[in-house]
Length: 407
Image (tube, rainbow, N blue to C red; front, side, top):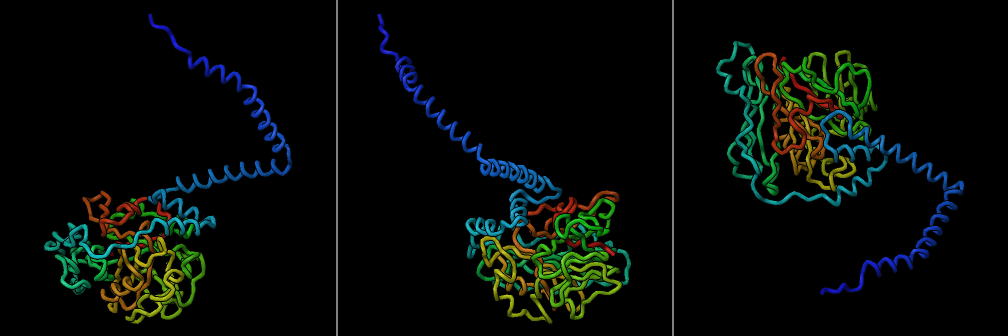
């Protein structure tokens, strides 16, 4: 017959019973200390202040995370922190996580795209007095070009005439696995419009929505991102009679005219306020000026050209410029310095150019493929590795942007 051994539960219960008075005494002492602490006026003020802070923080962060738009959660948290004087903490976190671009290697996608379905229909073009004007191919900066590198392909047409060309090119001979997207736009066939963002420049009677509404999509051909936040741009933002920040002489500027034309240059030097100006977007200083890349692009990179992820020089950057014959050129991509961005714009023919926004979460260039009458055109990212989705501007945007339409 099996005989039960000593009960561990019984022993444990006896021990607990033996220790209970001591535990109860400690609990009573701790509770007494808390009661005495909470009874002090200063402590009560601290607790009330902490409660108010937690309520405000929950409300403020919730507003940021649930605001309209396509910005991802990390971007929203970083923007909230920068807007509440916590920028140094964001910069520290980015510095810890930053990985410099790798050296060598091959691109992760073929450089034979992009191509729009428009190109296949050009042989059926309607008669027009405007003749196609394709930009010259871009020579590879790496040596022997990859298939399709630097070769322009039609991204959009107006009345059967190519108006929007795009190509891919590797920006330097060291980081050969990275690819920049380059777009050349014919102003004879296109008109440009400035759109505000709901957070930057913020609410006002701009008379232009912070999105591309359905009624405006029929002739839409392209969209691209704006510049820095206005308070960091060393300039201002103007649209339909309202100004955010201050329009500053010497600042690199995009100037939008009533007839749809777009100019790129230096405010106060050939560009100034006039009756036919409907929009101005300023950002820093020019990176191509009179066809020359100024030496300033190599100076004070972190302080003069934007707070990059991890304080790195090679990051996602974007820029826009204008050629001597009036074409608008947009360039963006990963692993770009201010110098390599400027060099790409100049090689694409720009005589004046400016940097736009930086860092991956703000980069975007989309072309739009027409669909049957009544349907929204299908947005397509130029670079397949950009973070923002192609329909970014079909939703409300937190930042300003430029839309490109067929004339």
